[in-house]
Length: 79
Length: 247
Image (cartoon, each protein chain N blue to C red):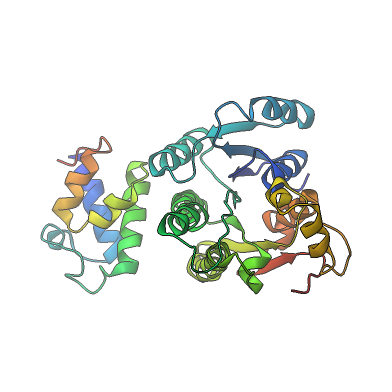
């Protein structure tokens, strides 16, 4: 639960959106989540959980839900 | 001791320019993660430099084209130091062929080592430097990448790519306080030029206004300058270290 809060906060802080907007979020579904926004989001997620993601995972990080799946690889359970 | 307290990562430290940069950085107080391919080849020099200059030289053995190993190395640096101040992309290969005899394997090998690995390494270094909002990235290019060189179309193109990469990333990463510069050495007295043979080397020296080969240590001096705060307002530049070579 704590990780989920942190994960949601990474999105809300990065994109300046409300919490209820994040769950359906996908890459380029809002103007803030463009390529520059994507790298800011990845930086926020890496800093939040103290991880260093592989390039392929950064590219695959295409939605809020997909990101949760990817984080499992880094032993971060977002539930 | 202009690098006292700084953490550096240098690729291709086992000989030539890379070895000279490693020694120069150690002499100036940096903690250095020193990369080379052959396991064990830096053990002795790492211990020697660590003791001589009262610093830490940590060997990092892997091929720079190994993506998994690159990530592992940067995770280790992050875990152990929690910072990275300097990255020197020095490892490179030179494979020459005249046009018409350039096969795909040669092109792939040269670009894989000289360009693709540099991009991969910078991507991970950036992750650490971004957090601290500072860093100096130094890419070792070549005068061939600036001027071109007959028989070295692929090598020259790869080093030209390194220069373009340097200029682009200086614009992209400056906002994070990260400086990106390149050094373009001319003819330097290393193993790399030995296959040319004495006659060809003498011939090349005729093009050098200063009338001699460069020393690896002279390239290392340029790297020290770009790594240190002495160059704190310099980014996106290509520092040519060639004794004024006229090609």
